[in-house]
Image: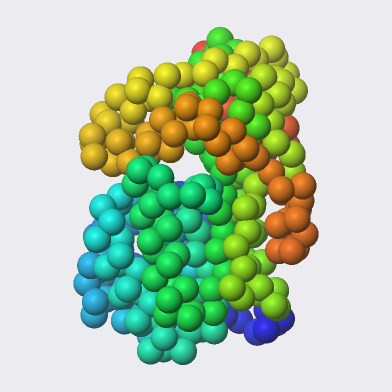
Length: 309
């Protein structure tokens, strides 16, 4: 499989930020893309070249319709952290993928996953889904990203960054993190779909280098053209703010990752792998400074004349 012919790709999660980046890149490269959604037509994100199937992962008929005639499947699970629900979603997808003879499945775990079992649902539900896919002997490639740069271009980070030079995030300042963008994640997905010989492999993908909090602030400072300092946020405060946006159950699931990292018991979980995964997938993640310069930070600025457009 060399990626020369157009693929018919079912992208689970394309109405979200990560899956949306994947769907847009695949469609822009001439592949046919289809996704599931429960949203009405007027409430869907702009995804040129993507067809929508009404329904959810809990609807077995909709899942089979999603996979009808698909040659490839890309899965990013929703922000659901109930083990049995995720097992059910993964089982429905695996059964449909097998039934339709899908050539390759790429599973984005949405986070790194510790080697040993934990009590953190955000890790363990993704471990469950991966195991379901492996037990069904799907032609599987697993991508395990660290933390997304796009999390920092947000209403709760942007204003502090551009107006006060403060970069706050719920990670220990000393933790090395191979920050990656949604765009580079999409490039990695494309590589995982098209490069030969990757079945049954898992990749701890990430950015070009691992950065501590102060390193990240320095990179942002170079990109923004101003001094930036890193402030580690307390995970419980982060969770409290997230709950107002996503609800307490989902916020607890997401924040569980940061509570775990705050213990310091697995300090290299989000670090890079010296470029091994990028080489295998044929991708070259952009430096953080480059990503920073591409974002329209002026939307958060009190003085747009002082920032590059």
